[in-house]
Image (cartoon, rainbow, N blue to C red; front, top):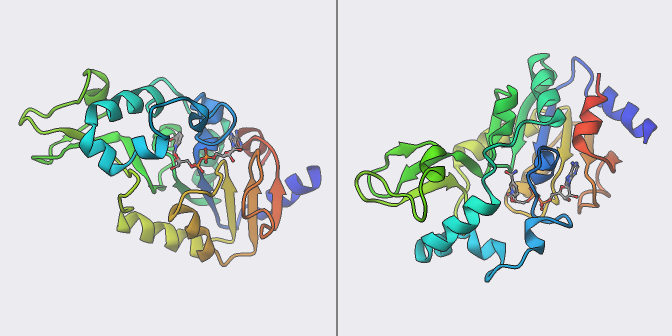
Length: 239
Ligand code: NAD
């Protein structure tokens, strides 16, 4: 582990460009459950599997049930950035991290101070009326019961990418650009099971692909270094 830590510190040294690619595991240390860990959302009993409940067709057919699940499981308004978010923001300010590519929708990287955050799956903080396009913040979702409605009567939909929906092409392009220009790609807190997001790492052309995850991933064999640990603890040790 210490040899691996040393190798990671060197790979992220000043003068090198590191891109961080993260998932739900980055926010577990902030108290937000991930999907696939023990205790994660996938282990809970719902009438439908989570990928059905967060799909576009389910939203359109059953917005009331969608919002019940969404408010209970996907929105954590009191969560605060943890050591991973904070250290990444510092490393960006030092010019060592050039982009944070995240599958998360919680906005914690920005809250920690990161500037170049590419949110592949959107954000709970952006919401929009499906009829007139008016934009709303998170409070529009949290201060209502049932299906939130716009002044015009339309349904307000979170700008999060639901299953069956396409990723924003500009965000994808920016992520590909950042990843393809990086010396180090640090992947953390993701099972790499959700596509097309997980497929972006194939654009990496640098010399150190590092993985920090609590459980094995399909990329472990291809990585230059693998650390089985908590990302907040690992990043705190990067000087
Ligand atoms: P996932 O739940 O499939 O996998 C999370 C991975 O992180 C697991 O392999 C787990 O072992 C690891 N992990 C958990 N805590 C960790 C820690 N402290 N340090 C290192 N590793 C840790 O998550 P995914 O791959 O991101 O896919 C789930 C999808 O659902 C994504 O789109 C994700 O963004 C979304 N989601 C987002 C949030 C959020 O915004 N916080 C929460 C749940 C799900």
